[in-house]
Every structure is written in structure tokens, then in C-alpha cells.
Length: 256
Image (tube, rainbow, N blue to C red; front, top):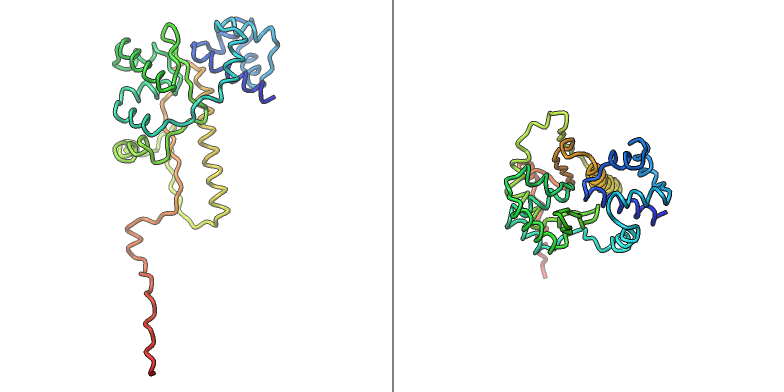
């Protein structure tokens, strides 16, 4: 079952890289879009339908199997040197983020002020970093895993903390698609561990949704940023009121 799931996920990724939607697959197979979505969700394919979908994508089944066999080579994190390269070149980071959200070459150059030649040059750099594979006709195949994340407290997170977070928090967070919650309390270690596990699960679900929604037309999607944080912490203005820890008791003088 694990191999089947990997095969289906790889097929979905290849369809996205080619801008092929569920609707296009449904039309090619003579099925309803709902039936195709159910087929992918349940990971239930006949060999005939799998062959026809591969033909639609312009790949052989053997190529699909090879991609499954090599998918473990996909990266889940960049090196610090690579992240520094993104920080030093904001256009490179822009194109990388677009690729992470499964944008096509045409979508990138139509939305951002990048020439086709400039975009190709940036994609070639991402190809060299093994972040994407630049295919013929400027098609893009994302090479990072679904669990991709930035280095904890690495160059990208430092950029956010030092230069971007003020812009991020410049909102009332009162719209339908916004949320800001601040909760304080004292928890036992088991409760903290359980809460951390739930936050990590939420982050993983976000990555899965990002991948799944990549099949939708880009006009139906919005760029969002999810920020999860938890740490033992007390505001500095409150820490000022804490009593200083008592020093060692004075030694008792004894008569000898």
C-alpha cells in the first residue's frame, strides 16, 4: 500500500508540474471530475487508466516508477549556504517560493516583473541547487519533499525575525482569512509535549494542503503564511518584577 501511495503522489506531482488539472484528466478518461478526485483520494486505479493518465502527461509508466524509486533523494531542507544564497538574492527567493507553490513558468513571468530570460536564469540556479528540475519548454518539477522546511533559526528565519515580521504583524487579524491567538498559561511537561506534537501536525497538514491545492488554477489560490510558535517565556516588562534569587547564607562565625 505504501508503494501505491508513493506512486499516486508522484503521478499527482508530475501532473501539477505540467499544469494538468483533475478536470483535464476527467475529460481525457471520459469521467466526471468528482470521480477522478475520488480515484486519486482512494488511490484506486486500473492499469488501463493509469497508462492513459501517463500518456496524457507525456510520460511512460517506467519513468513514473523510476521517479518513485528516487523520490527519497528529494530534499527536506536546504543547507545554510543555500539559504544564505536566497537571502542575498530576493528574486531567487521569489522564484523559489513560486515553485514551492507549484506555479508555472508562465504564471511567474505574468505576475512578477521578471523577463523570460531572467526567470530561466533563476530557475537554472534553482536546478543547480536541486530545488527544482528545469524541464524542456520551461516546465518546472519541484524536487523538495512535502515535509520541506527552513532551517530552525537559519538565514531565512533570521530574515523573517529581523526584517519581515513587522510587516507580517501589521494587521488587525480580524478578516475571515486571518487569525491571531495569544494564550498564556502554565503547563506540565507532558501537556507541553502533546501541544508541540499537535503544532507539528498542523504544520504538516499545511504542507499537504499546499501540495494538494497546487492542482487548482492559481487564480483560486492565495499566498498565505502560517506562523506557529511555542516557548517558555515571560515578557521582559514582567520579568523586571521577579524577586532576585537569594544569595548564599552568610557563613556562621565560630569561636575556635
